[in-house]
Length: 120
Image (spheres, rainbow, N blue to C red):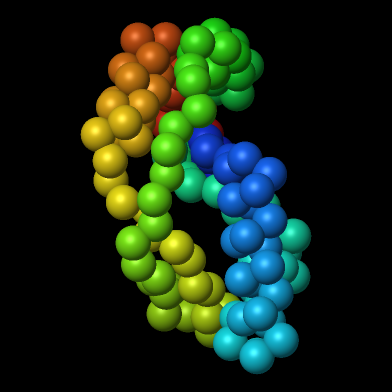
């Protein structure tokens, strides 16, 4: 089953800082999974297998065109306990970030970007 996500990407400066950290971790053989899968540093805002992609794209284009950049602060490092040994930065849940995600969820609910589970 396909899964769809909405990801918040960083400005080039922060993205480069995160990529440098990933490379240090890979050289020290701590974690290299995100480099191997060619992931891009991001914050996942939404994840679901039940999405109507064309409706989602239309809703997102309109929503994103109205948004300003968000200040992001990270306050911890987390890990997934799996054989892939994925480490990740944990964003501080600022008012701006939480309001952004709340507005996004409202758009997704309003535009009904889901597809019915019975059509899977």
